[in-house]
Length: 123
Image 1 (tube, rainbow, N blue to C red):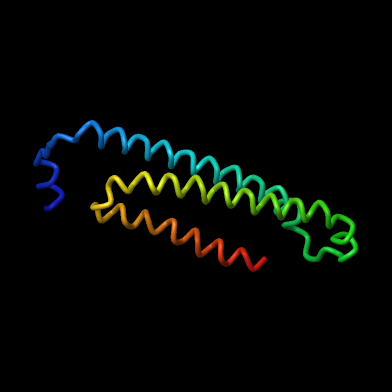
Image 2 (tube, one colour; image 1 turned 90 degrees about the horizontal axis):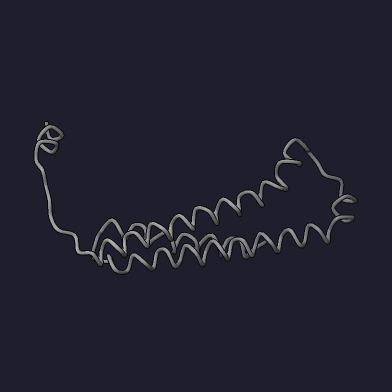
């Protein structure tokens, strides 16, 4: 019944042009976050896919390719830092809308990234 009432009521209010521009810029920034995450995911899959069926890797193989594994690990850290920076900028765009309660939930995304960074620092 509530849905029926909601669909019959037409609500309209003027949205300032500045808010429209900020919302569009935030949308573009989050698209950048998604593309950065996709690139990081593809990089992670480069090592996951060949070894997903391997139950155990001999230590000699790890020792032989330790330089490549170290460079791969460093690239993962760099990818994570890129994702974090792009996401931070996208979330900061929402400061314009900070009074909206739904936006505060998205701002918690930055806190979640920091927690993930702290967990990854262990490795």
